[in-house]
View 1 (cartoon, rainbow, N blue to C red):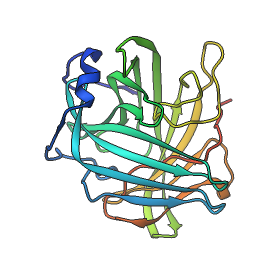
View 2 (cartoon, rainbow, N blue to C red; view 1 turned 45 degrees about the horizontal axis):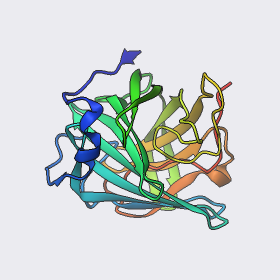
View 3 (cartoon, one colour; view 1 turned 90 degrees about the vertical axis):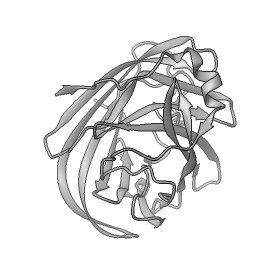
View 4 (cartoon, one colour; view 1 turned 60 degrees about the vertical axis):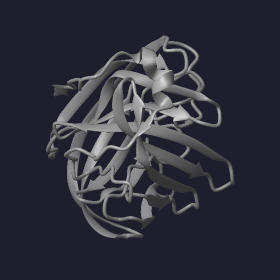
Length: 251
């Protein structure tokens, strides 16, 4: 198993000012399983009726001194409640990194230093990698907790979703930290409220197609009725998605 490296950047203490700075930047070499082009918007649905939209912004936002692409996520449950969370991404040497999240409604966020390695270069079945990082408050710059992400590519499959048939790799993730208040590494509300250390880990899966990106995702042991699947938007370069609103647990 690989341990994540760290792209260059400064510390977390310029986070607040960096969030206010927008600068256009052409995307560097990208993994074909995750695209960050401004046209790479997508919509996902579950069979039970929950929806998720992903918007890759034209401008790229500076986070901890690194120019990162912001993806804005809007998720609506079948019952009508919704949540909005933004994520910040970069590519370096063929690897994809998650730098943090921001919840604009609540004015709450985290930044990871070094960033979490989400997809390693040239992933294939059997590949595995791990990130252990420090999380900081995105408003104050104060250290909050350690975060760890374990990733394994477990299978190559052909799957059918509403947007079509895709040859995919299955990425399995274990998020070893849930932020107090029930937020995962993406800033997504999970319903799990951490009361004591250590945090309960979360498990989720992503089915990703080359040159398309995410086409299906599942959270924990959710039934198929709770899986988000690609239904529309820009299929060429569809951005990542999460699973259902429930928490996923690892035994």
